[in-house]
Image (cartoon, rainbow, N blue to C red):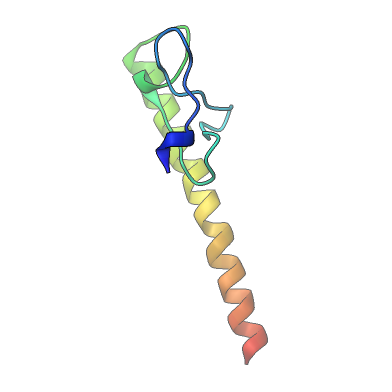
Length: 74
């Protein structure tokens, strides 16, 4: 699965978008593992918060779809 992960060439950091999403659906990264200019505890905490909320939103989409499927079945 992680063989297709995108890394920056210079430092082998994980490339993410503004939601901390990687190029692999459902995989998020944050803090010192991602490609970014500043490395501080405060920015890492913020990145972690964004990644956690994005992951929760991603998982909620599946739960909602599953509930809708169950409702149709009844």
